[in-house]
Amino acid sequence: MSAMFKQVTIVGLGLIGGSLGMAIRRHRLAERVVGLSRTEATLRVARRRGAIDTGTTDEQTAVREADLVVLATPVDLIVPQAKRLSRLMRRGSILTDVGSTKGSIVNALTGRLPRRVAFVGAHPLAGSEQRGIMAARAEVFQGSTCVITKTAASDPRAVARVRTFWKRLAGQVVLMSPERHDRLIAQVSHLPHVLAFCLVDATSSDALAMAPRSFLEATRVAKSDPALWAAILRDNRAAILQALGAFERRCRRMRQALDGGPSRRLARFLHHAQAIRCVLRDT
Amino acid sequence: MSAMFKQVTIVGLGLIGGSLGMAIRRHRLAERVVGLSRTEATLRVARRRGAIDTGTTDEQTAVREADLVVLATPVDLIVPQAKRLSRLMRRGSILTDVGSTKGSIVNALTGRLPRRVAFVGAHPLAGSEQRGIMAARAEVFQGSTCVITKTAASDPRAVARVRTFWKRLAGQVVLMSPERHDRLIAQVSHLPHVLAFCLVDATSSDALAMAPRSFLEATRVAKSDPALWAAILRDNRAAILQALGAFERRCRRMRQALDGGPSRRLARFLHHAQAIRCVLRDT
Image (cartoon, rainbow over all chains, first blue to last red):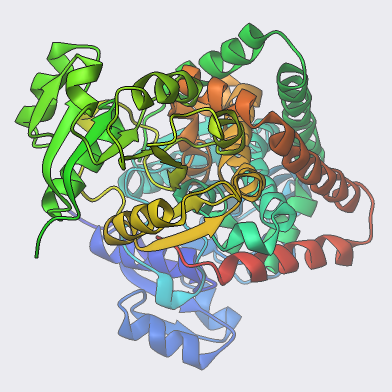
């Protein structure tokens, strides 16, 4: 079976970019994986760890022969990079990203790139609180869901190719609008991060000293890179504020149930949430 | 080496009671582990799984020859059971519990039990969202912290024995007042449970369908038994409401930082929480 792409170029060799390179090579989805990084040191590690075949710090060298360019950089860098790199890409090539927000990125790029390059937004719901090429693993995407965004301006063939690409790497691919992505992801990823940071900050050091597993798990993602997450949260703030509002209403309801409400109200609240949570498939 | 106790009786053979029996037998802390349960079926499973040596549904048979009786039943049952069973216990024996709240239990029992029996409150910070004897495992307490409560009315020798007992089973034993226990545990265990229930309830079903690992981990404890947790939350509601208040203030601060605040404020908030979380030892 011939590879899907002759050359895939990955821009940014952190946890996600590095893992993506390893996964592409393991699944033989490209004849050649090229890495673009700001530093030679990262390229050396990425080569040694099997994340890329070759690497370069030069943008033109990296993308001019690529069939697929994947931006795996922080969300606030994606739009300027997409604009710059697309001018160096060849006719018929596809530009995609793995950013945790989609609305602002897709909107900023629609109609703003050379017509010979198709942009398709994507967001694999995978990764961890770790960062950097040393944390990369080929299995990161295995069994996960990847969201691919589709708008009226999307090139259907490019969407289909990116979909097939992620179908091979992740367990499941879902197509939706960038706005819907941002609304749903605010609830199940961005809000849990917000709550983890808030919970850690609200806890006294005496209490932290005896934190059990429930606390450690609930706050694991508060170990995530603060700069990366500040950019994500700012970018998707409208949807996050809405999700936070819905959550805060539940906190008030809980407060009322605890604070003198009839005891059956509390039990009903817990039963309802427990029944919902118990049907979710744990990874 | 002779065992610490001739007979330990465990009242309630659920996840914690069953695991405790297995751990006592593995560490040879008692010559005989007796189980008290309402149903013969549970006793049979507990015997087969190696959680007890013998079992009975009769309270007097279960406790009259015990050196140590451990109440491993839901928190709202502990006080009436302690009062009833202590009248059947022999001189010099120790009564203890594993309840997730301590203030109301210790206060309700102080000065209310026969003088020949010493009561020592305890709370091993271990377990999981699972329940029942089938989920019991001898390793549940390994490496965990056990809080033992001490008050002006405590029998120092009984406290010392319960401390040694838990020192062998858990990694770490901490002595503190029941009130301090409730205040700290509200922050690191009860509040995370409250937030998990609230987060699940606040999430739309569309979003739940693509819940990534961050969401699943943050809400794992929402799978916990609702009746058990309604009793715990009600019992410790004052401390929980205080912890919830501190948490809600951070949510408001986060909201302000997202909603038009200077972008450095958000980054500072995340940096601060991340630094705190990163020094906690994950299990």
